Length: 638
Image (cartoon, rainbow, N blue to C red; front, side, top):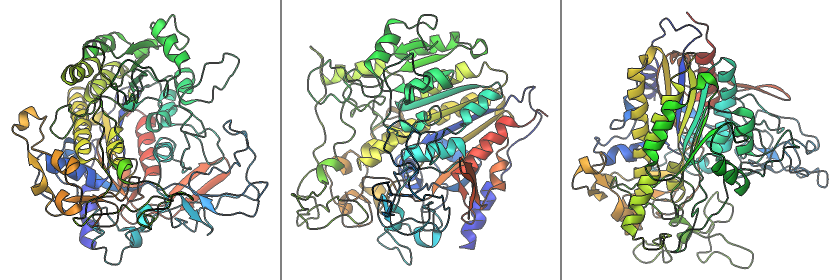
């Protein structure tokens, strides 16, 4: 064990360059979040690119694995008792609860739960995905003696040793909770968007950057009002408050997109959520569905795309012909020094609001198809009138059924992946995909555009870039999409690194690449042998192998070379997050700040006070990443 800790320390201790800074600080801070991209997910993509097989540590093969700094991070949040005025004695803790009783849906408007007082310790992970604990304590915490001191210990739940293979499922965090911690340094509850457990607004890192005169930006491959981008620029109590009809009589619109555009005003907002054929499961287009943006907001911006004519003061772009060229041309014109702002809304038809999905072949053969059609067609939930056919609930789940297997270990029902695209009149599948590629930029394209805008600010900038559909692939237990989306994210990382090298280098820029949380994936030792070679890696965007066969035709762990969940005999046994610690990769100005937090206690302040909890030896916490970003943004010019 000492060898592991020493290795982490040596990589962590690689110093960032902290030389003289430009007047006004001039430091740029870029955080790139692979949503759900735990250690196994990064490893999977690295192996698909042909990297040597590895079973521990940082690994090689991906752009972010070349960064000089590397470490591990805890991602846990809170769990709060379910007491209400009607039932003040019910003290079962759940991770989705705030400290308010929920009688008023407006953020912060409900009374505090009876007799509630925040108790940081003892840690209280419970025994179920949602907590479900009657024990005391309001932080779920992380115990390395149960979950393992590193994401590769244990390497497989098939051989857990003295570790508890179910532990990392308990009280798993969501993307709203973890993003709030990364952006504010405060632990909160699942669903919290920039608010503490009392649903009170927290100051985000985006606001801190603006106070320093810096430009700010949010970029994502999924809807712009989703949890990871939204938590930096909103303060709502539920992540599902994506948008609302604008009401000029309200000072607080109480929705993510309205607060982002009206209150936080990042200079750049680029991502998905376009209503055209959103989640259209038919074979006919067009259908408009307004989930992540209301019809009111969309039509106002569409009809008033210029900042002088719309109520938000944004240059508005949307998916359309030659989208990348249009975006880059507009980015060249937008000047944050003049307060100018850019909002680009994209998203492929037939999907779930994200950019065109690329596959493990490096192509777009899964573009236009539902991102959630594998796991959901294998695993169903039990009800009072429809019990599990297997007679078993998946351990730690609330009510999901263990699939019934045939004699070969394959599920008797499913999976049945989506194969129908919403074709416009006269379209073929091939012309559909070609149109989606043309009308939507890639995540790397969005990143380039954001950097072109924000880089004009001499005071520096703060930018978040998210690969959000990595998480969606993991929710679906879809190895094909997982490899493709991690590869897309890595292309965006390379775009950022190239920009840094041409714009001040590592003395002026801090790059942090991490995950907000993990899932529960295990690769068998023969995983690479189960992959299919791509005929020409140069034409498959650098991917040497694809996972088409093991995703869609091999449905047991032996044949597929991998499995999801804690049972090595079931391929599809977990479609949710986990509380396992995740990697962080970093390099640049003030990066050595992270080293000083190694193994240190977790400390944060919310409405009710300042709280401290023990850290994990040789491991960081997401609160420490916030502190490192804040230090880089606010340091005095030297």
